[in-house]
Image (tube, rainbow, N blue to C red; front, side, top):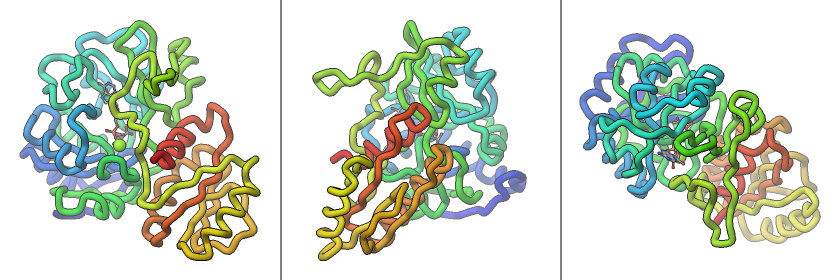
Length: 333
Ligand code: TXA
Ligand code: MG
């Protein structure tokens, strides 16, 4: 395993060439995107893609996103390219948006976990773009963490979680967006939001009109269309997470006080609390900055050995949908 440090805006051609060659040889390369670090493999190489599932401990039913350098290359992977795809691609690519479309047969089934659709994204990070151009193949890349654990926003997080199972890590410093891309399914009648991210429902709807939201039915299944990867427990630190609404703050403060007597506790808060805590992180009050900080804060609290983490819930507002989704899943048991 090697770590190559690169300039985030102007990565050295020699480092990019080495990483692209490794991908073409079927090896796993971790690289920065603007959202989180991805664990990449040549999407056309079934054996390489299988190695991603092994390294992450990812269930084989959970499909991967294929990353490409240009919208035109994404279109080559899709069997149909509806107007909605054209409009969303023009508005948000390169950027933190993933589109699910019917798949062309040359994309191996292992990428799509046997589904008839494929998830496609053109990332904006200059290092990702340079790598994708040099590799000249679609690159399957989930977040570069062990399945269900906290996603990586630095090369150090990748190293900590995956270590020797990665051939090469391109280290370009911390990522800017901080949470994973917004995933929109365009394979059915109407666009459906499968995973909220920093591109909000309102921003999507301004471009394509009404977007269906995932709704949980009585069986706990999501409708209209489930995304196999939206497992309840996800983005979870080692510590037990207690998510508290601001109106339940007094109660949470009491619980923290009790726990702090015999356990190592940490907190991620929007407002300070009157408790002596092992580790306390005051989070930004703006959704974009909160998202950028979210995973590094969870990693820090884990690294500090916290057994329990109290997290103050963020506002129930569309601008916070991506962060709320990650917090809810981090707290799921
Ligand atoms: O920002 C991101 O999207 C990052 C960076 C590396 O690009 N990648 C990422 O990948 O978050 P991953 O594998 O951690 O999440 C992909 C999500 C999962 O929820 C998966 O189930 C869903 O996309 N997905 C992939 N292909 C799908 C498909 N054909 N149909 C429905 N959902 C799909
Ligand atoms: Mg992930």
